[in-house]
Structures are given as structure tokens and as C-alpha cells.
Length: 422
Length: 64
Image 1 (spheres, helix red, strand yellow):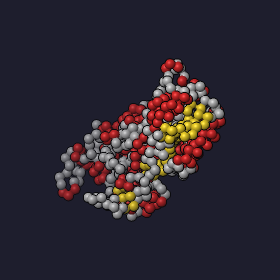
Image 2 (cartoon, chains in turn yellow, cyan):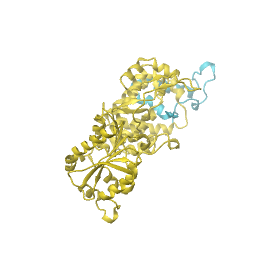
Image 3 (cartoon, helix red, strand yellow):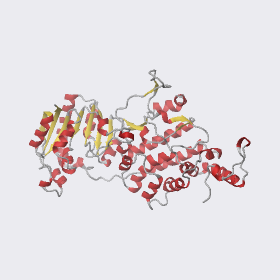
Image 4 (cartoon, chains in turn brown, blue):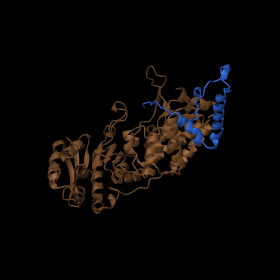
């Protein structure tokens, strides 16, 4: 509670909260027995993890982390760690949520979170910007992020003349190896290490992070919105969704296969908190950039392999399904990808939609559709799952849902169904 | 919020003196001076203790 009082008494805290950089925090009078005190935050609509963020999200979070440290140091405080798990996104903007990370700065102390900052923010961003590889699989597989030595290996001979690569990657890897098992904290203190030095590091790191850019490549379904059938049917799909929203009044909508976020936007405009899920980082990055001020959260994950429970005992970071809790699910332009591309049997897909335990609006795509033809690629008919026709879908859906509305799209190969769980 | 133990890493801490550029020069100079004094046994120990006997008593890197 001492650290909290030190933080709460500063102008830094007041202005960071007012600018929505730091989560609103008040002292609670409801103190659990044996505790020194309790703090209260407003409940966030949705929690997401760095391995579900796009490049620009992690970059914005990194800049927030550095800006808060800069301002905290000016107010005589420091942030003792530097992990993106302390940052969440609300209305399309990052916000710092871990009040317990702030403490009074002790003169002579180095920046304790520097190494963690490089592993969990800087290296993942470099991975995308400099090597062209997605950082999310790495952060999902190794939650602490790449070590300096691993990052040096990944960089290879790239960026040989970059000061950022030289200092934060190569030199850090070397010094880590050389100084292993030795303590330097007291030595740095007597040598006069100061907050001013941390400020200088933060300034330089900030300009390095700001310089990292990811040139989007429109691959996969990024240009989906320009397909003919999409333009034709988009209006009918929007109307069908609006009817479903009027019927169900959802507080929370989960848009699976959100693509460019068009339908997520319609649900958000109707007043719902929306979680837009897609596996295409390029389109989702654009959705994030346009989401400021809206009740739209972005989650990058492959629905055929969604984020599992992670960390200690598999419960420290819960699975995306456990966090979703929707009142309405949108599954437009999705299930044919699961069936034909990810090879999930149709009956499994229907069963999975039922697990959300809420109404679903779903677009069914028949085997005759031109897009299905592309998804099938070189597979032969006997290599595909059975039960792919519309009649099969009706039968499967009818086992666990009531079909409360349906409409055929002008393409002739697609239909929309509104399903309510039985 | 689950609280994580954070290992700041000795190498990473020391590196901060280097990255600091101009701001780090004074610190680096003082650190090197300490190291030199330790070698010669003239490092002023606090509170009248005996001078440190070897470089390993300090946190600074030795030449390899």
C-alpha cells in the first residue's frame, strides 16, 4: 500500500488516468481479512494477450510502456517490470493496468525491466519488422519472448550496421553470457547510476521502436472485400445481422472470421461490445488502426487452433473460448474455411458453434460455390468430409439449434441462418 | 494479477551504461576507476572495512 500511496499522490498518476493511459484506480473500503488494503478498477470488457495482438498493437503498447516509464521517473517513481501482459486495449487504445508495477525510484538503481522489455516488446517487433516473421507463434510458445542470444541467432547477419541491433541484441547477448552468475547491482549504484541514465535509454529505445515498421503484404483473404460475391451479398448479410441483433439484444458479440471488421462495426454501432477474431494479421491490423473510440476488441488467432490456457498450471492465461462469453456469435464467411481448408468435419463445426451457448448467425456455403472450389484446390471429392450440402447442414444444425430465420443470398450458393440453441 | 519474479540480468543491467551514451560516460568512468582501484588494493571500503581483496568482490566485469 506504501507504493500505491506514493503513486496516488503524484500529478503523474492523475494526468495518466485522465488521459486513459493508466487504468482508473481507487482504494476500496472492502478489505479482505489479512490484507493491508484493496484497490478497485473498472471491469474491462475483454482481456487479450500479446500473442493475439497485431504488430501495430504491440508497437503501441511498447510506446505506452516507455512513455509511462519516462513520466514516472520524472515524478520520482519507476515501473519495476516491462511486460505487455500489463497492458490491455480498451476502445482501440492501449491502457496500462498493473498499478502494482509502480514503486518509488531508489537512486542508483538501474532499469530492472530493461531485459524484459527487449524480450517481450522489442525483439518480437524486430522479428516482424526486420526478419519478416510473425512474433505471435513465438510469444504463444515461449511467453517470456526470445532471449538476446536467440534473437542474435535469428538476426544472423541482418542489420549489421544498425545500432539498435548491435546494442540491444548482439551486445546484450554477449554481456549476458559474460556476466552470468555475477551481481552488478551494487557496483552500478556506487558508480553513480541515475534516473537520468534510464531516461536517456528510454528516449533512444522509443525512437528505435517508433522506427520499426511492418510493410503489410495483402496475402490470403486480405482482399476479400473486393470479391464480386462479397459486394453483392454484403448488404443482405448486414440486414440479416441487424435483425438478429434486434431479436437478441446482445451485450457482447463475437465475430468469428471478422475479416475487415465490417460486420463487427455494425454490431458495435448497435451498442454491443464486439470481439473481432481473425487469423489474418494484415486485415486485423487495419481493423485495429480504425477501431479507436469504438467498442471493438481485436483478437488474432486461428480458429482451427485458438489460443489455449497457458502459463502455470495452464490457467495463468485463459483460452480465448473461456474469455469470450458472447451473447451472439457471427460466423459469416467462416465455416467453409474450417471445413475445406482446415479439414474440420461439418458435424464438428456445428457442435463447436453450439458450445458458445448463444444465438449464432451463420453463412452456409455450398460445395458449388466458386470460393469453395479455390479452397478445395487439389483435393479430390472422396478426400473431403461428407455432409457438406445445405440439406446436411440443416439436419446437423437442427439437432442442437432451432433455425429461427434464414435467407438465400443472390450468389445462389450461399445461405444465411439464424440459429438459437435448443 | 499474477505477480512474476523478474530476473533483470547482470549483463543487461550493465549494458544500460553503454546504451545511455553521453549520460553513461561518467558512470562507466567511475566504474572503471573502481575496478582499477580494486586491482591495486586502494579501493576505499565503506565504514572502515578492509579494502576488497579481489575483483570478484565487486560487480564489475574483469578482463578476459
